[in-house]
View 1 (cartoon, one colour):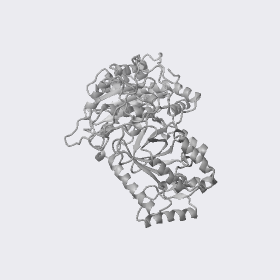
View 2 (spheres, rainbow, N blue to C red):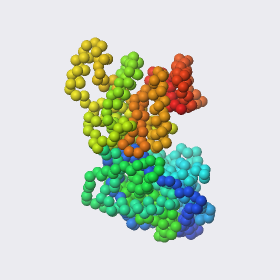
View 3 (cartoon, helix red, strand yellow):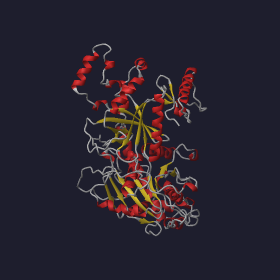
View 4 (cartoon, helix red, strand yellow):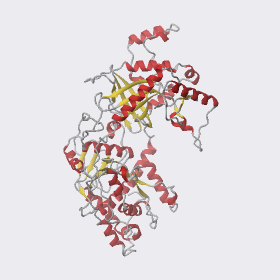
Length: 623
C-alpha cells in the first residue's frame, strides 16, 4: 500500500456512530430497480461505435485477449474487508440513506437515459464513502466527495434522450484540487489530488448501452474462446509500427487475476464491415474495442459495460494486453454482493488501483522523457527555410506541383502519428472513381504522415499532415536528369519532374468526412473550391486533391495549409487586433469570393487563417 492509502485503526473497538452499521448494510443491500422500455419509446438505430482512428493504435497498446473472470465481482467486493473499522467510524451523513430509493427511477430505453438514471443518489452516496476511505483519510470529517461522476451529455433535454444506442459519456474522475468548493482541503490531501490528476486519468470508464442491447452484452462471453481478439485495423498495406511501452500496472490490486497463458499469436486482421448510416449489425467486438481504445487514451484500468439492467466489469491489464471480464451481472437481483455494495466496492477498488499505480507512474515520468509522435513536426521546424526565402516562393506554383505529384499515385497511405496513435497499418485513400486493387506495392502509394489533429468541423475531423520524403526515393535516372539540368540556370523551372524538396515537408490539411451526410457536404465544398480556382480567386487555400477510403463513406479533401486561425489571438474582450493592411487584404479576398458567386456564411475569427508572416487568408470553408 502507498503511504497515502488508509490503514485500519486497532484502537477503535466500537463504532463512533451506532447507527452506521445499519445504514451501511442498507446501502450495500440496495438492489437497482428495473429499467423497462415503454412501448412508445423508440429503440435507437445502432451505428458502429468505431472511429477510423480506433484502428491506428500501435500494436503494443492494442487488445489481444479477452478472458472471463467469473469471480471478479466477488473479489472486488472483498476489498472492503480491510476497511471494516473505518466503515464503522464513518459519519452516517455520508451514506445519504434518505436520498436513495427505488422510487422515481424513470423508464429507460436509450444509452443516454440509462446514464441519466445511473447518475442518481446511489452513486453520490458511494462516492462519498470511497472518498472518505481512500482519498482524504487525513481529514476523516470532510463532508464531501473528492470524486465526481462526469457525464458530458447526460444533461440533455429529455427529447434528445432517444438518439443513442451506446455512449461513453460517463466516467469517474478525481476533482480538481483548486476547485472553490474544496477550500477546506489540507496540504497533504491537496498534494495527493494534484499528483493523481497529473499522472492518472479516469478511475472508471463506462460503455453504456440502451436497455435492448442485452444480446451484445451476452455475446461478450464468446470472446473468451478466441485465440486472439479480432482487432480491427486497416491492413491492406501493412507496415512496421514503432513499439511503445504501455504505462505500468499496479503490482498489487484489489483483484486477483489469473496467470498469463504461455502462448503467443500473430496479429490477426478482420475485413471491415460497411460503416454507413444504416444497416449496421451490432457486434460486441466493436464495442469492446471502442471501450479499450478509450481506456488507453484515458489510462483507465476499470471499464464497466452497462445496458441498464445488466452490467459487466472489465479490468484492463496493460502489459498482458488483456481485458478480464466478469460474468453478466443482473443488478436487480444479484446478492453477495448486491448492487449497492458492488458499486461502492468497485469505486474503492478503482481508487486503490490509482493510488498503487501513482508511484510507478511518477517513476516512469522522472526516468524518461514523455514519448511523442510529432517527429514530422520537428522535421518541419528543422528544415524550414528562412523567412526571406519563404516569402519569395511562389506558393501557388508549389501547391500546383504538389497536387500533380500526389495525383500520380494510385493510393495515399496515411499514417497517424500523434498523441497515442502510431498506425501499425495505414489508412489507404484512392481516387474517387478508381477500382480497388488487391495489392498496392511501394511504387503505387505515397506515404503521408498525419502529425496533429486540429479539431472537428461541420463536415468531420481536420488534421495537419506532410508527405514523408524519407520513404519516397527517386530513381537514379530522375536524380541524374535533375542534377544535370539544375546546373544550367533556369532549366529547373521547366523540368517536368518536380523538385520534391519544395514540398516534401510542407504541411497541408486533411479534412475527413466519415458519414454519408458529411461526405455529401465535403463533395459540395470540393465543387466550391474548384469553382473559385477557375474564377481566379486568390487568398484562399489551394485544392490539393480529393480521395475516398477503401470502404464505407470516408471521403478526404486535401488543402494547402493556410496557417493558424485568428481566433488564437483573441484578447480578453474576445477581439482581434488587425492592422489596416490586414483588414484591406481580408476585405479584398471576401469581395473576390462574393464576385465569384459564393457566399461564405460563416466568417469569424476561427475561420480566418493567418500565415507566419501575418498575411490573412479567407476562411477555409464556404457555404
